[in-house]
Length: 145
Ligand code: NI
Image (cartoon, rainbow, N blue to C red; front, top):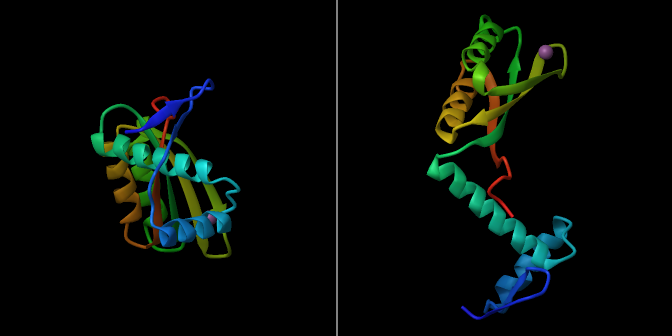
């Protein structure tokens, strides 16, 4: 691989890319608010490495689970609270937002082994009556430049 290291500890490298691919990429990153192609590529590289942290399943990861549900569904609030008490060692905090007269949003911040975080997220998201749920996988940042 051809590359040159700068004094700032950065590496410059040349990449051959089809014109149509780089134009489409530039258009997309401009829509996302990037003013700089290098920053967009660095973020893609980091996202790829965070994915690897989750796949390798050793060490600590962090994540957030967002769930939307109707608090009037019989037993549901109790089920969600019981789950959070069961996994209290991995739950950093929970924020509850009353969206309207019926719907609630909960954002649960998790920290622990990837495998366990995924298990906790699945049990919350799949609870009967949860309308929508999503796990966002992130990193403690310790392993990421
Ligand atoms: Ni509520």
